[in-house]
Length: 78
Image 1 (cartoon, rainbow, N blue to C red):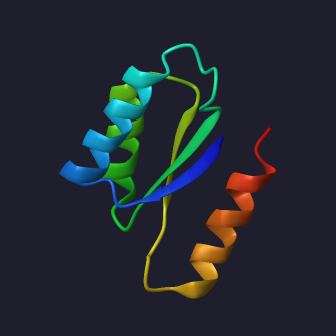
Image 2 (image 1 turned 120 degrees about the vertical axis):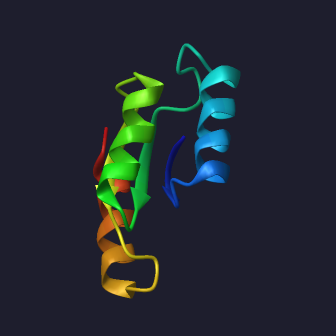
């Protein structure tokens, strides 16, 4: 499964930690695009997870075009 998480605050970070904990070998979770308005926050969370399956991007959830680009990026990742 590939997914895009928009919002790398405390709740988003907690969700990602649980996902990594539930699937440490990547048997069903293949990629997560961690998006936040604050790129440094998204990068910090992705870096904290220390796993190639998690990458960061700056994204504004109120901008439809940015959301479309993020979704396409997540789908293209193999």
